[in-house]
Length: 209
Length: 168
Image 1: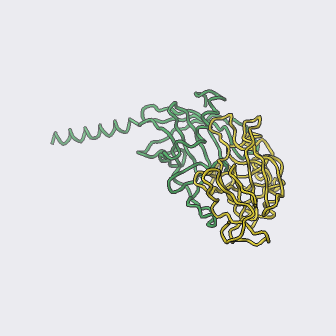
Image 2: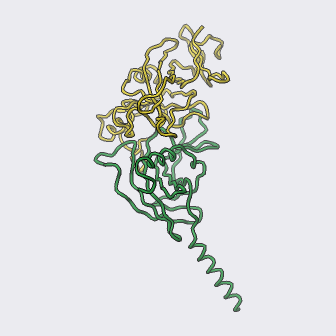
Image 3: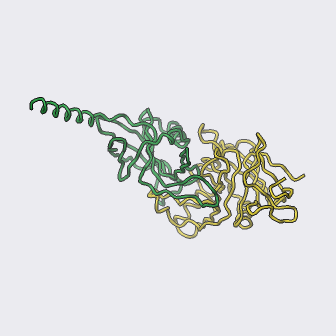
């Protein structure tokens, strides 16, 4: 039973210890939020194996309330390098906020890095050459995966890979990549761009009874 | 009076020899002149972040200069795994009181138009001021929390495979 007394559509729990994800409250069967901070959307990533580049592969399932609205695949990390691990398993959330597209390096960075974002960010390569280079690294949209657990990955994004990003097509430095299929992140930003999106990386998800 | 001069001379000699002996650097040194920012309040994260440069001196005299986003929590500090970073790799050498580094650009998350990798070899002296390092225009202090950061392990491992440990 979720906080608020309504049966939840989906509950995220850890694989070990069955601790419910912090702040995770869903909408009830009538579409009414059980709590202001409820997640309308939930992205579930379940590890399936390793691709030829050495990245951990995932099946991705996107829920809108209790309905599956998209499925796909993703990848993270590179097992060929001992320390390039995939995104750490756990619970993450995406802040419902769409940040402005990158157009110039972070003024605080003399080294050409774009400013960090904490919600969704569309990346339009046609704006200028710098935006195009950011697009090569992150694809047309990225979303920050904010860890709910202290042991979660810090600074990871759910992003695409449309160029030879990091000279590492098919693997990442620890982010979760959707590759070239933007179906899910497009849906997420357009439907959950003003609310929280829960993200489960290899944690147990209890389906509605 | 003679004793006083002797003492003064010994003190000066002592300080000169102290200045001449610089301990070999080790581990991670983070830029201290940075601007910290806080994540959006809605996230209720007890952390702050900054764009910073980090110097890393490995025991086998390999050198890494990394520019990226550092995330600092109440008890930990880490290099953001997904934010942009720029990595230079090379070697360091300590001769007397002189700390010298040679390095070249090896990767950039967001490429610069027209730039080819690896970049040209650059050479620089790192000035040692007590417990502080001065590199180019930035000031660095020792940061043991970043010593074990995966980013450095990845860079060192990849470069060992790619170029051998002694090549810049």
